[in-house]
Length: 35
Image (cartoon, rainbow, N blue to C red; front, top):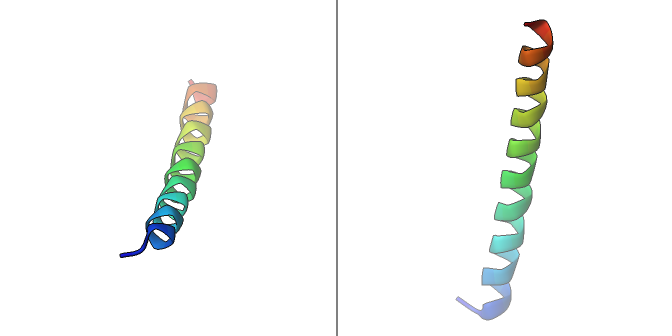
């Protein structure tokens, strides 16, 4: 494993996790809006 491939993996992981938590926060807001 070279250093650049590790960095690219971390960036991809960050984007995936960021999108996941962003979607989760929107879903929580919609649930709170209903109640």
